[in-house]
Length: 329
Image (cartoon, rainbow, N blue to C red):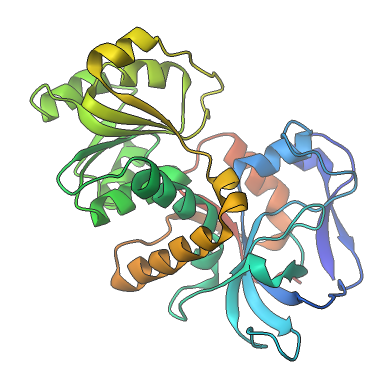
């Protein structure tokens, strides 16, 4: 079988090598999956560069989200050969390979109507956004939700989930194309932060009140500006620092406006409460079948274009999720 291997730490175009290898052998409690699609994440780039907090020994195969069909399972397994699933492969044997072995607890059933490409793009972004909005922010119908980087993977998921909860959603994005994507995902209003001050626009749209919940995967100056348009008793969700700078918050300002700074570490939650992850997944599948959510795919790249796809992701010129699909052979 073919798989992508990181042999030296560098940018993806230099680090990744496509090689032939034996099909992996599973043991009891594991499933062998024929990979049909794999979603890419920004941390895949950091893994190639050796800049991610997890540093697997060389060589390794990246790829944290796949979908495919089960080709081997235990006789007494709850899973069936031929079943469509999504899965979370573990380093150093990630998902950018024709066949992947995963533990049964890292596999999730998906609706038959969901494409393999959509299934591979469902897990991390929607789990993160659902956990943030429902578990951490306790978003209520009728509240105003401000979503930063609304055209990105977690941002587009947050827009859809916010609307499904009955919130009024305001999104920010950079450039006309990304603003339009936010509107297509269901945002009631979309602000081009390159052209106008989102703080003033949010205040105008809310009659000076501000947003009840702010979903911030960017950090840096975006967080600093968000404090200017958070409502009294509001919640700012600290989802990540895609902007590259970790901000510092003056606590007196949080006291004066009575808002909460709410950390969102879904990965840690997933390790502590795996049953909660399965519950969220079941709800996400229900919302998909209802038509409330649908993963936003920027493009589906062939298997032999993984390095160039990661380069495009790193340039931040894309939106939604980038997926490797089609034939993996």
